[in-house]
Image (cartoon, rainbow, N blue to C red; front, top):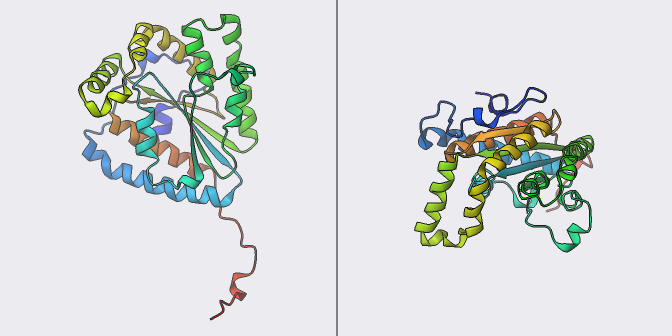
Length: 270
């Protein structure tokens, strides 16, 4: 299966989040069945990241968005296993600081865009400024509604400057979120993850679904596509995302740089 074709939101064709099945596994029956493919994807990803780093002319930006307990941290931990840390940087965007609030909403985002040769991963992103700010009326509609075009222009600019962008919405059901919250309560080693504010956000589930739907529909473009990944099954989420990242890197036509000298004439002294 071509996961990119299956889960990409095509520009201009409309998108309804209710039609996306968070429990889909594309025919895979179990974690055991997917394990070998995931290992292959990780190996390919590591190989291509090495070439990206060596070439030093392009960058890859991976954006992860989800509801609370959607699996952003787990995706980074499991999918990027084996990637050289020198060539990968993860940025988590939390509530903006006073300094960040004194600038436009994209200022802190642009600072974190990966340099050439790097993979950058955003755990949350500039999309928070059309999600949480919308749901909680932090800014008026006339403000956040203009940001879709600003985001598209920003991402187009990055693309024209050598940054390939892929964006993932980790789609879980409301029932699965509740189960994951309950798991955090029951297991002492997960108590550090418990935040009552996350539970309160469930009251706004429908509002968030509408906000995600609009953001994905308006901002899935040819140069920065959105992929809606079924994520109730963590193992399938990892499989699909690892394949999409590896396929995207493959399409970037990465090349090792030419040597700076004629290596055939080099002699290593005894």
